[in-house]
Image (cartoon, rainbow, N blue to C red):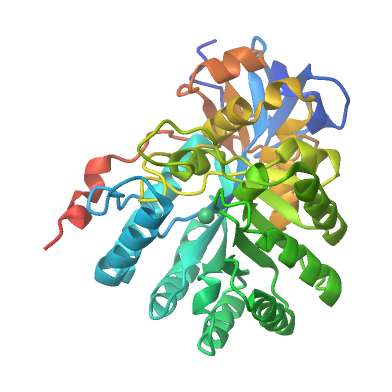
Length: 418
Ligand SMILES: [Zn+2]
């Protein structure tokens, strides 16, 4: 069989390799057959195709991205690779260039990449400093409708907690109108507790889930995660809460960091780690980086905290690279976080956990589930992670999709600054 072409019509993909945890079993990799008919997995066998041990995953969920920032690098490069350099550069670019048309074209580029790589659901943050919120949120609603059936989309408002003022009520209304998630970047301000109480009050009143950018710094004194966990426990805020980054845990006193994680577990927070972006921004300076910014994912998992990994930024000042490819995220997270000698169920961090944290449909390989699959020419983890899997097959509703990636030249008109 040519790996690149599967027959259409009812088919049985024989001899696939899958992580046992995705089938609710213990152990590492197991072999399975999957029957596909009418776009779904079924118990009725079809035309048999020997897949010769190819690894299969349900289509991926990317739960922390920035589609509105993506691909501005050519006109807005980070001057020095630092977090502050990224923040200042994005602010200047958004003020100058982020019309609805500009944001739309870049978002569509990223969505085309994600779709081609085998992603079926994405949560994106949207910069919501006024007046950008009035531009990006209506646009997001249109794009979500246009992409329905290909990629399920959710959005979160993104604004620094220092900018949270009376106007934020309007942003929260835009978020509620779009069925979005209330988000904020937490910095260790003296009055952060009051700001968090106000934030949760706004979210509660509108029935919104919460998603924070938290402690994206190696300064051990940045402990806003602890305050979020305490505030959730104190207020009894019951909608799902997600916290991303948490880099400062990696430089804090061990006992203190673990004590904070006990609170995070108790508060039921979902964690998302963004290791590629952390690797790029953290410990950036003239000398060789010593600290790599990844949060304490093993210690979290040991406490039952649901940990996920996601793309974060793509080709913007916060991360110069990236292609909305969850297999790249899986490969890099495994290498950076040493997931490969730490149990056999880390696959949940790229599928099950993000789906549950965001409320997307659960990934499934059981009968009746949509045949949305990523199939790789690799039979084991070492074969999977040794190559970028550029020749993977992606099936959506049982049909093999065209995996051609968009051409960077499509963005050239947007990159010309007057
Ligand atoms: Zn982010």
